[in-house]
Length: 113
Image 1 (tube, one colour):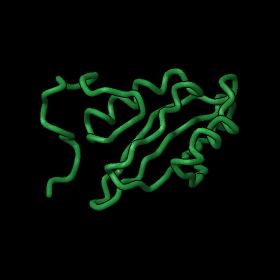
Image 2 (cartoon, rainbow, N blue to C red):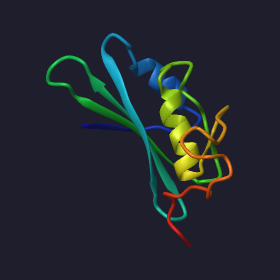
Image 3 (cartoon, rainbow, N blue to C red):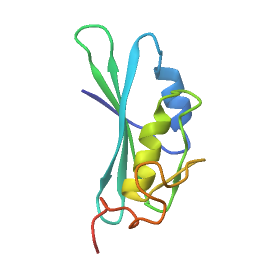
Image 4 (spheres, rainbow, N blue to C red):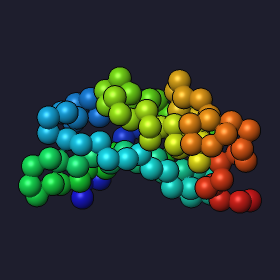
């Protein structure tokens, strides 16, 4: 796996420079709760053998808003909406209520304090 560090400021630029829909499959977006910070990850897989996996990642304060990559990877809206509900993070132009009811417990997969 190739792991590439990015920042919220450079995320869209970095993914747009990398992502080619005919070459890459967007697999998932992931969030790792590290307590005071959170590692946000975007995983892509090459279509061609040997199907290399590339992960873009950044470390954020959980209160920060993450830019959406939907304008680059159309299917990313699903992963973004899941993380808004399940991890209680903020993603640009993404509301709660896709996976869980909007009034459900906030971020059930977040570490409890």
